Image (cartoon, rainbow over the protein chains, first blue to last red):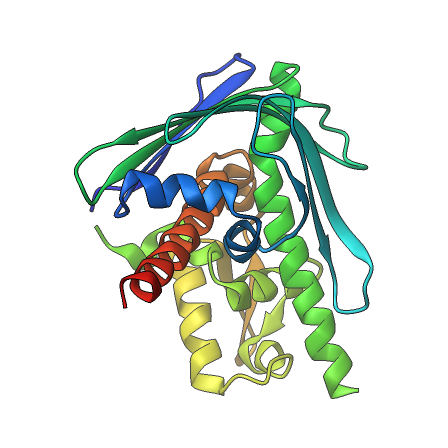
Amino acid sequence: MERKTKIHAEDNRHDLTITREFDLPLELLFKAYTEPRIVEQWMDNNVLLLENKRHGGYEFQKSDANGNVVFEANGCIHEFIPNRKIVRTFEMTNAPFDVQLEFLEFEKRTEATSRLTMHVVYKSVALRDAMLKLPFAYGINMAHDRLEEIVGKLK
Amino acid sequence: MNLRRDVFQAIADPTRRAILLLVTTQSMTAGAIASNFDTARPTISKHLQILTECELLQQEQKGREIHYHLNLEKMKEIANFIEPFRQMWDDRFNKLENVMKAYQQKNDA
């Protein structure tokens, strides 16, 4: 089976490219990035700010069941061309990853399909590699949290 | 391709990740592992089988009991790998696609 999401990351480089083919018309794919209520649904974050324009900014936040903030990210939008391109910075608050630069390109494939190419540039090779490993560590943490929840229920 | 032997398929499941976590510090029997979950015992057995087939878990005969322990070498192998990152984006984009398909249907109606 062809994998829909592809990652291209060469050794000893401080960037990577993520590509994805969507069974969605281009306009709908782009809308998923610009409507705060929709972004919230698929990113699983609260959107505190989203200014879809050159020199605009954005802020995402996620809280746990007790209202503690567990994830916070923000950035500036450098270029905004509807249905074509977004260039923005991205930074996680309280995380040792520094700012990254993201080039998002949206392309029409057919009337019903589209493609997103995301070129992400990190500050260093080490930071990029740390970011690549993050989901694995995070997955284990998530499993641990869930485990604590289950164990908590048994008590 | 036998998906069951795909190590990344194995760690994509939260219960299986929880099992791996349980056996990081000690080897355990299937029964002891299962007692940590609300899930039915045969389901846990299936998870153990998958984790053993992809070599994340190793079996060890101790008297009449079989103990499971973590295969650290295999864990190291995947910790350095890019696949979990891809999986994370794939999950996220799948969600985007589903959200927008629902949105499209609502607006076409």
